[in-house]
Amino acid sequence: MEDVLPPGLLEICLLVGVPRERVRALLQGTQRKPKNLPPLDPEVLSVFVPPFISRDDFQVTNTSGNHLNKSKRRSFRKKKERPKIENLKSLNGEQKAPDTEDITVPKDIDLIGLPQLCFPGGLYVTSESKEDHIHFLVFTDVCGNRTYGVVAQYYQPMQDGYISLNGQAHWESAQTGKVPVCFVPFAICVISRYPYFNALKDCLSCLLVQLRPFKDLDVEEHIKEFAAKLFLIPSPPPGPLHLVFNMKPLQIIIPSREDPDSPVIDLDLHLPLLCFKPEQVLQIMTCILTERRIVFFSSDWALLTLIAECFMLYLHPLQWQHTFVPILSRQMLDFVMAPTSFLMGCHTDHFEVVSTETEDLVLINIDNGDITHSKMVEEEPEIPDVPAQAAETFIKRVESLQLHYDLELCHLRASADLAELQMRRRAWQQKLNTEVQQTALQLIVNIFREVKDHLNYEHRVFNSEEFLKTRAIGDQPFYRKVLETYMFHSFLKARLNRKMDAFARLELSTQSEEDRFNLMFHTPRRMTMEKMASKLFNSQYKISRRMVISMPNLQDIELPEGPTRNSSLRRIETGVAVKTPSKSVSTFKIPEIHFPLMFQCVHSYYTDFFNHLSKAINTSPPDNSALLART
Image 1 (cartoon, rainbow, N blue to C red):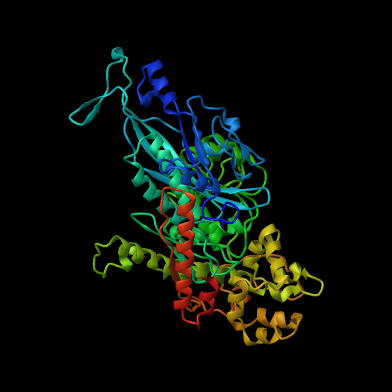
Image 2 (cartoon, helix red, strand yellow):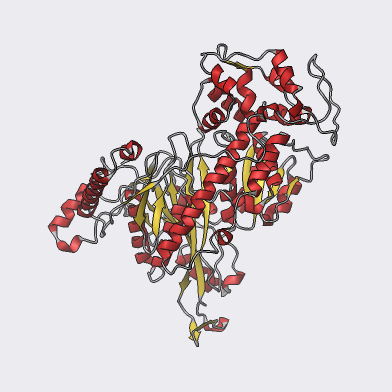
């Protein structure tokens, strides 16, 4: 059974926190209140990894009915004498803990650094319970492969030695020697190969509701069942088929990617547009395109990863190829001293430290929308402007978007059905995500459309000097910086390979008849200098006299003064959206997964899955080949 289980959403699940015995010892030994305790070092308390059952479990359950809830554990759980943290980490994938079964942990998961990221602001024992909090993590290995984490923090009370007066916790005096009531934070971290931020957030939200009535041991057993369920949920194949399963009280939707080359989008793409003005969004995209050293700041840990991920998706199919650490804990602040390009994120409490001790950083405050530079720079480096006409088109399209859910649906009746409310919001978000994604993709196409005119497919080279000569003077600083980046070189490689990605599809659908005719030839004909000059001096590219910039001429043909419209935008009218046909999406509801977790239950689940899938295939219309291929 272990050898045939398909890969699921879950890579590994962890319970992180501080052993209660340590908290109790600190309070008893110092007779201090929780608010006076220093931050504690979090530890990995339990690890839950697949597979959670084996054929041995099936044999055990046949021997006696009393063994139903005693199947072999596939997790490490802390004992009374906790082993050193070094025993938890294993680069080779094997770990051991006293009196437990050996487990396998993915080799790129660092169990030593992970607890800090689960509590990036530090772990504090409190005298009052706090609201549950969820944030997101991204891990990148040396090969650039990313793994994604969602962390849910929650608080559990320590009930030992406190008096309750009228339902309120009351502190004992220090002379009594009793331990006061306190609340100890814990974190559940789910790590997946797929960036299902919203889906995993919803799953953890359901789990937190279910954990409230349980004690310590029951909590770990419940987390184990939760992790096993996520492991049994497969990732949907690329195409128009989303998966749905019940986590109680929510229906969880796992969205599929549009095609194998498209990214998974399971977050709200309009978040940066709520935090920044369109002009600022363009500035940030320019910083990423020119591969600057960028640090995001926010008082909300969740926003750091979500905003950074949104900007990564805005640039698709271009890809950031440098260090990407959207959350830095307070112990990791020295990472911003790295000399290479990076994109990182910090809490706003560390803004002054980062800005004064490190130079040549672009500092982006998500909370107030400010974009500044580190103070050690004598003269702030200028962020070049996005080509004028591309920027104008982008700004007009963003301003036409309806970014507020309440305004969009204020005319609809109120609904008392949670499932209906959830589906209504999800449909609105999916539609908006498509519009934002298309707006960002059109910007990328508008900026780099004419790159293909300067490619030599036979010799696989790009004539950058010739390309720069055809750019408007005001746009040249932007292109000079972008053309030097690794990101652009990868983009060029894809163009030379004639890759049919999102950029190529949109560029092809909006190009002129002449360009389409040139595609009939194996090697497109290169433009002559006369043709380039005729483009440059066309009446629609005349320069506005409002801005005058003097720069040396770059070719024999004298360029006019000042910025002009990028000639690559001639085929897209300003402010007119490129309409894409709406794609219908189908859903497949995954059958219920029954517990206790045994071989029989898992076998029953896969049998139900097969039957449901067969029924869906038989009832699908035969003309919908794409859907049939996915099911």
